Image 1: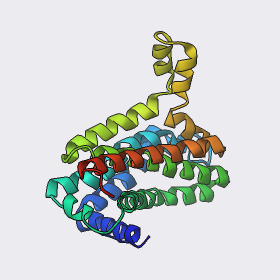
Image 2 (image 1 turned 180 degrees about the vertical axis):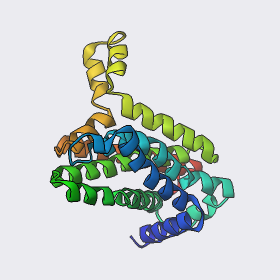
Image 3 (image 1 turned 120 degrees about the horizontal axis):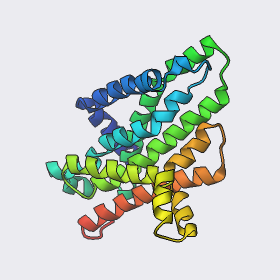
Image 4 (image 1 turned 45 degrees about the vertical axis):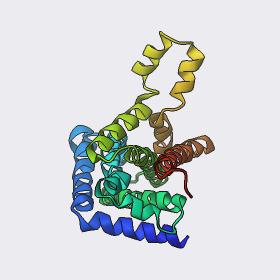
Length: 246
């Protein structure tokens, strides 16, 4: 646990020692309201809710989360500090989890920057605050899933740009797997049961359930499984690189 905390503090400090965290937070703080107001036409709906914000949240996260995760391991490999880190007495699981939690903390801070919009909705009307809170939980879980996948892909290459592109591609596939146009294409080439099974892997469908205020055990299991898959893959890739150590 001490090692996890040390890695967590190291990573959070690293984010703010470079422009990355400031640029990320600034872009998110601008882009999220912009999508809600300009594209989602928040004030034209006549309702006091944040539905337009969460309509576009998955698409914003699938681009910004890989940008946040791309440095996790790729930077270590590029700078030659990975071997030094792996030689430390900290367990690999603590390293991976510490890096993940640091990135997730930055993502949570970014989501918190949109809370003034929530306050504005309460000033203008009587929104369903429970549903909005659930939608924020869904956004955080979705961000966690994308960050875990991004960390795994960061572990596969020393190039942060490549890690970012691969991360966006993986998050996009996970997001659209249940989209109607994807299901139509899959149904034409495989049994319907298989197509429906692939649709169940869609992060977008799971997020939509949460943003409507519905919390189900299946959705929570899905997101935690997605995080576990990404972090487990990152551990396997890093462990393979050092030759099957701790």
